[in-house]
Amino acid sequence: MPSNIIFQELQNNGGFCAKYNGRQIGEINIITVGIDRLIIETTRMDDDYRDTDLCYNLVKCVVEFARNTGRKILCRCPRAQSVFNRCPEFDDVRMIRIAA
Image (cartoon, rainbow, N blue to C red; front, side, top):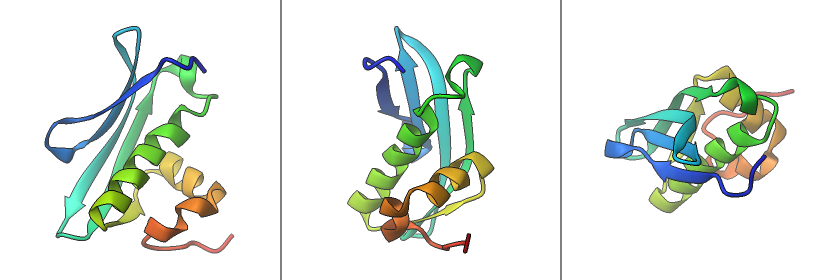
């Protein structure tokens, strides 16, 4: 994966996007619930980036946002959920831990 991918917050805290050479290549959408919860609703990536760590990096953006704002995350998106299942370092912001 190229090292010069830029991750940006979407307007109105709606998630994050990834851009490469000015073109959006991925997006993760979140919903804020109350003052202490976030739901990862969907992720989208260009086909060229599906087998890279782009999804991990998008989820990491949401995790850092949750840590900075004192929130917990619930995943509705199966792709984001699979990242959480592989990354115990995100458990501090995970709302529900699904046993493997």
